[in-house]
Length: 130
Image 1 (tube, one colour):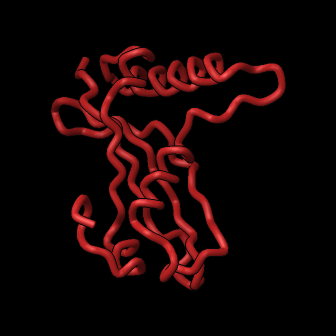
Image 2 (cartoon, helix red, strand yellow; image 1 turned 180 degrees about the vertical axis):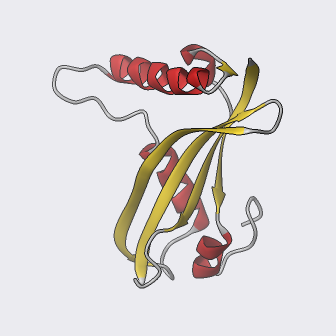
Image 3 (spheres, rainbow, N blue to C red; image 1 turned 90 degrees about the horizontal axis):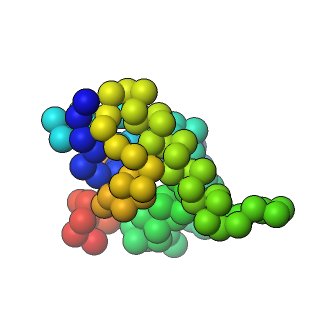
């Protein structure tokens, strides 16, 4: 089994026809050998904000929230929600052959990468330099 070295969320334009922000987010675990394992492929968000009003920093921050852990609801505690989230993601990574437990997964670096299409919409500089 290969160790997980970091989490990566890739953000891309979801709807090319709209003038407002609409993006998808793919959340993956990056392994020591460079391969990536999909953890969440069903995330994204939209706003009424136009692309000209949005910022790369804002999109990166929102992406981290969107991929979880979720806020507590009902009688669930934040700690319980976080534990369930990391266990679920660790299980997905382990099924793909990754060597990681829930506690370690939650402490890994988490990078958010904006696609070229997002950067063009934002009129921003390449990833990490905005």
